[in-house]
Image (cartoon, rainbow, N blue to C red; front, side, top):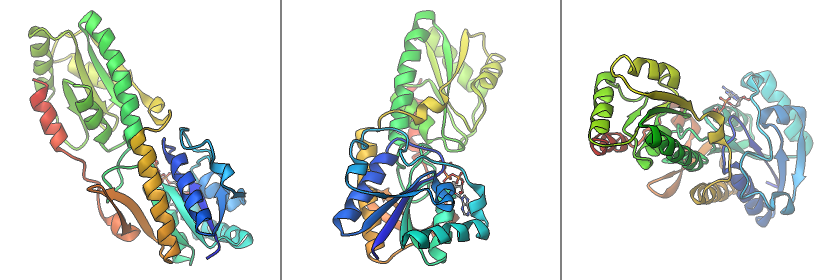
Length: 319
Ligand code: ATP
């Protein structure tokens, strides 16, 4: 193997650039030529491909987003789209790939592996919804952004004795809500993985205010419902001065945290090691602080398991 390609796909996440840098530098150090592919699978099919040097990835480790850009390209789910991508791989002499993205991106990577182009997947998404990894690249940065915002919301909430419903991203995964909720001392965390009792939440908020708390914070995962809708429901159970706030896409931006940069670096280096061993169709992750890899086929059968002890712990501490 002489040439590898790198692409980022699906939703962007802080730390994707650090992963691209690690893959490129490790591959160059191993005597490989490295090609960047812009705009995910769309750019692969369009031949938007360029040779990378060590300098290409300089000054990138600290930057949010992805300098290789990302795109949704549903056509890659069809064989026709995949064959067009392979034409470009042949044209550029690229024999293997590292794909940084989520579950959908892994499907594309597996298809390429089946066509004879080994591809390794790295979990790049803020949602932390990828199986066989305790953390995805971008999750920690998104949590940091969420707690920065919640801390600020708490200042204004306290000044007016208000209840704030803060909707955080994460799609159907409640991890961001759980981690950001625990880290910001939320009065309630509401996630898709657990049923909630609106009466209990309202009673707890009322009790908190009666006990001298100057605010109430509910951290709501976007997969449950909108902040506005939740506020309207909550007001049926208590007479609060309540406001709804949705953090939205700001959670995807910003400079990656130490944890995300180091995670991206470790996973990127390991992806190249696997390609050098002639392996493909594997997703790399971190489990119990060890770098691991699993077959993508196995991964598609599995679900991400969040640390639910955080949810239970918060219920006790929020009283
Ligand atoms: P995120 O979780 O951040 O949204 P993702 O990788 O799951 O990331 P998707 O939009 O699901 O995001 O997938 C990214 C891209 O992967 C798609 O636009 C498409 O090009 C490719 N892809 C998705 N599903 C398949 C599939 N079944 N076969 C081949 N390629 C696919």
